[in-house]
Image (cartoon, rainbow, N blue to C red; front, side, top):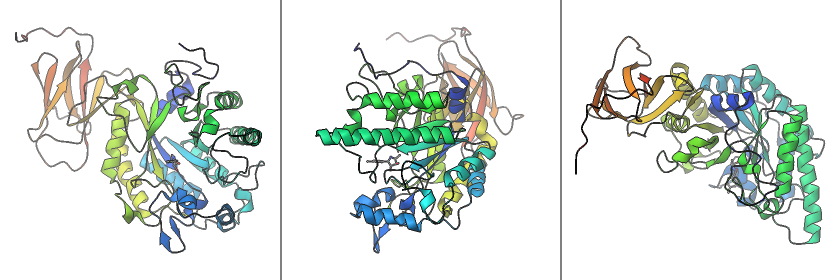
Length: 452
Ligand SMILES: Cc1ccc([C@@H]2N[C@@H](C)[C@@H](O)[C@H]2O)cc1
């Protein structure tokens, strides 16, 4: 093991109330909203297929031109309460919003830069309106903050000279001041989601990433920090040079999920996957015909997949420049929300159940419960749902979550193997079966292993 000054500060999962709430939330709404939402991926009549929040670079727009978009930011259709109501109906328990993305524009009236909401025609503290509206709906609010900042002249991608290190040190002070401002002025913030930390300049300043984590936790005790902020003494990110996870949860899954077999080890730490609805658009893009747009059921399966592996799922919305939410996103919120209203108990406060992944879908289990949840996406033509149980686990009764009176046949077919007999019919939404189980029982060894 290497002696590290800026490595992981603890090992294992945090079990304090704030982290237990973060974990039990499971389902969150990501919101990417900034000046990039105004052009929405189109510049001088040309559509750029790359991520809309990168239009400044994909369309080679000068900083002066891009920054002048600030004078056009005046979301006439913005209504924080409507956003929060839609999120509530979708069934999210938390929301993470871009306070400042790579463009450097701040949604809050920061006293450390004029490139902020107070100098737009909108003027008001839009971040406060959003935080208050979501909190009023009982939804926790987390802040995304990009360390990478295209606007601030002190930003550096690498440190190649004395001037670079002097300028970048000014930048790090600026960023730390902004973060302290956010943690102080928005006291209900529950977590910070850092992005834009992959460049050499940040990797060479691992000390700063630990200083920021400590500062935020002293200003806002219990606050949760993602691993993506952190670099250690040797520039190792997310996990330190001893392989220990830094920050409070792993945030390496972006537009992808851990494999239920190959990546099963993620079940031993906290993690979150963030996901776009199109193939790769975080900010609003006018033309979603340029890539696959995930259906509500595809996204719902990802949410269940994440819960089944003990992780959170953060689904991204990109509001338009005028503050309205596009119809595809409204539809997804409604469809997922309708399912969550009936089946949310197999997501909220649920975790990895400890069983082997099966083709028909996913297992989840509520902490300390003797009830096993089975969420079925792929109904077998036989109607027979195969279950392999760990040694000592016995399956007893089962029923569809929505029809507790109607038993589903549970048949033990071999040592630690069961079949559940699912009625064969057309199902048009993911089905949930709850199974009463006993642990720590010795199975009657009535099954003979073959000799080979
Ligand atoms: C190469 C690359 C850089 C930054 C990103 C940002 N991280 C996501 C969470 C979004 O904020 C995206 O703009 C994505 C890809």
